[in-house]
Image (cartoon, rainbow, N blue to C red; front, side, top):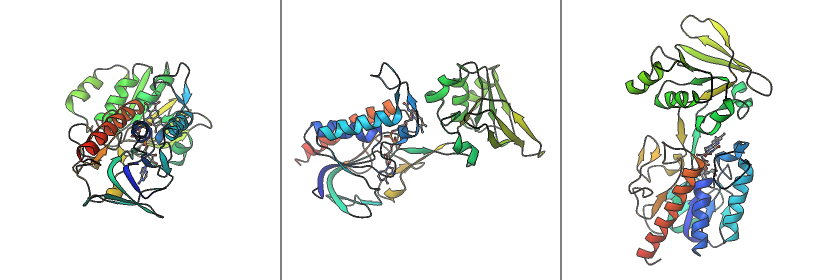
Length: 307
Ligand SMILES: Cc1cc2nc3c(=O)[nH]c(=O)nc-3n(C[C@H](O)[C@H](O)[C@H](O)COP(=O)(O)OP(=O)(O)OC[C@H]3O[C@@H](n4cnc5c(N)ncnc54)[C@H](O)[C@@H]3O)c2cc1C
């Protein structure tokens, strides 16, 4: 592989791979750095039922292998390594992994974001088996069931409200004795008979062998422990965008990449796509859509720069 690329894509989730497909089909031979999770977050789930184009559910890993093969078919080159540092202070830009340095005329950053978890062994064991960090993705599986949401911010209330479409009861467990969510969200949730708030509450253990059979919860004021009979747990305590490797090379907002005009970052020629900048929608299809936009914007930039 040459160590210069016209476009380098950092990240191989739906955003990065969609960008690569568009760039490769434009004969730009992109180089994709796959990172520690080739295929991205969807490789950690089973059925994906909301990505258009599949009459039957497709599994996350299968969908991502298909996307990678499609990108490869048109000439994308993959570097299965983690990017440790970038230098966007001069041109060409440089991208460093443990074993090599690649220069490139333009860069698309699509490194995603990771959900924050409570950090319980039982929670991790039951991820995808009743424990989730995405109501939009998994709410559908909880029709006529009881679920709990952990978190006290807007995102938690949004998840809880969405889950009332399916679940018969939604407990919202809040660590403090009040919510952080905006008043309007609180009012909406308070008037929903399916939602019940449990303040000063923490999950001690997720119960069940192969699926969630309940929660052991603790009142952090009284110390009292009890069991809550729910079949699902949604953890909504925030996401961490994967931007640490950028150092101070780009402007960030709350650690998400700051954008203007959809995909442009604070450095001309560096674009972004997907969950690493999109704190709002966080879906595979929106990430793929942003990947397409970033690729088209990068092509336009290269044309203007006559690269
Ligand atoms: C369990 C689970 C189930 C989900 N189910 C659905 C669903 O059913 N439908 C749906 O639409 N969405 C679902 N989502 C959300 C969806 O997966 C994300 O919105 C989507 O994957 C975001 O795509 P992305 O390309 O922006 O980032 P990601 O998929 O997070 O990919 C990020 C990529 O960047 C790479 N990377 C990170 N840091 C570096 C680095 N330093 N160097 C190189 N590479 C790096 C990673 O290795 C990875 O390849 C689910 C998420 C989870 C966790």
